[in-house]
Each structure stands twice: as structure tokens, then as C-alpha cells.
Image 1 (cartoon, rainbow, N blue to C red):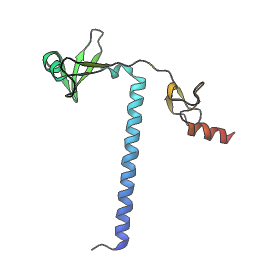
Image 2: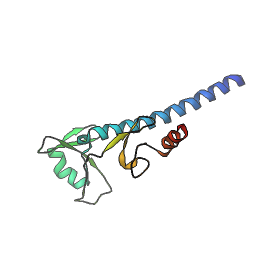
Image 3: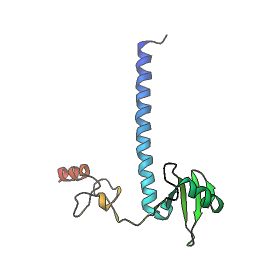
Image 4: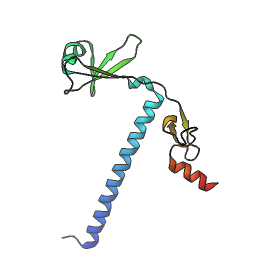
Length: 137
């Protein structure tokens, strides 16, 4: 039906679409990390058992996309998720704390200091950036 040339073009385009999807997923992950890095109040997460969810969260919480919101006394809120595998009465909290961050001297991306390179005085986001800077000198 189609010539060989068209088949090769279709395969090349499908490969390019898959590569772009993968790159988009990586960028989405980096964007989520940046949002959490610069706005730690958004990272208050609570995972509860189904019993706790039905008994306490549903009557007091507000439904949102992906879960419920529970308002705190300080004006912030927890996003509550249900884990069906948890035993009754269990609650898991995740609260953000500020981690120091810095800009990479090679590529300029912002990274958390605990993930930087070299370990003692991190100035680079990865070993790859460090090696490229050393080669430039």
C-alpha cells in the first residue's frame, strides 16, 4: 500500500514522538521538583488508611482533584490521600522543610546542595557539569 520510503518516514516520526514524550516527562519531573523547592508549603501531604479517611477526613475535608484537603490552624492545608494497603488507624505525614539550594556554575540550573558535586563544597549540579568545567579550564 505505502512505499518503503513512506514506511521509513513514519517509523522516524514515531521514534521522534516517543523521544519527545520521554523528554517531556523528564521536564515535567524537573518542574515539579522546582515547584516543591521554591514553595514548600504546598508539600504538606498526609496518607491515611481507609478507616481514618471515612471516619475523620470525609466529614471535615474538602474534595479536590486527586484527594481531599484538610485545613490546619495556621491557615495552610494538608492534601490527604488514601492508601488501601494501610492497616486501620495508620497515618503517614510528609511535611516540607527548606533545603539550601544553589545555581550550577556550568549550566545555571538550580539544585539542592545535598545532591551537588563535589560533596564538601558543591558548586555543580552533577559530575557531568563538573567534568565539562574542568575540561574548559
